[in-house]
Image 1 (tube, rainbow, N blue to C red):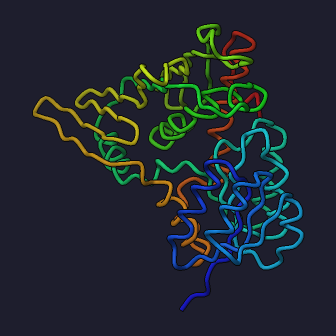
Image 2: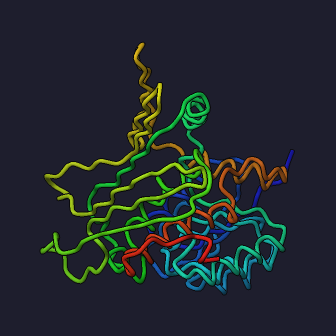
Length: 332
């Protein structure tokens, strides 16, 4: 029988709490510590795991916990960076929530630190673990793709840091990064991006400076072009969100509705696959299995690969500022 994987969590927001609940469902895991400034989260964790060690400081957790196997990092974008480096230097395997951060220099440095450390690192692009995505990849291999369009049109999330561009990086970078990443998973590297956006639709929302609507055009190394529209102006009580993407080919059209279903359409008929939002558990479980076995192939999005998704959305934010096409190879 394999020993239990000793895991700590850093971050006490919604996702830190969610990851804790998922980890507690895994018999092969022992959650030993959590660090957050949120007192109510620490209290809740203590109720669920009486033996857990609680810290208000991330650094103190890493200093005191000397037998960790893995660390789950569930922090807002602006808080990423140093903690990943400290964990890697201590040879602690990492599960890092997306996006990797907002500072390109720090993240590039972390790529090297994590690679040199030899640790396993999984990044929370959980939709890659949807088995339907493999069906989509197989369908793409048998058709010529002419265009791809994505959309993330929804409400503004409640955390105050989200509406501050310097903390979140904007909606495409923090939220629709999932669509960018999945399209990269299907179609390969992105080479350039051009973005345009606007502000001012949400008169009732105080102190926000992120774009409330943007459209980005991504060009892939293959020559494929994709557009992604982002909007966070939908009224929470009366509005309708629209999240997903469509792939248009010579023989097939694929429509993906986020966390709900995918439909593969052909002239002879169509097939719809229904699913739910269960992939956070699947992704986290795959990471734990990789740590147990040392099999890094179980991880579908490692830090080095997620860095490419980061560069694509980071380039889009630069394009918004400069009103020009940004080439990713100029950023590395």
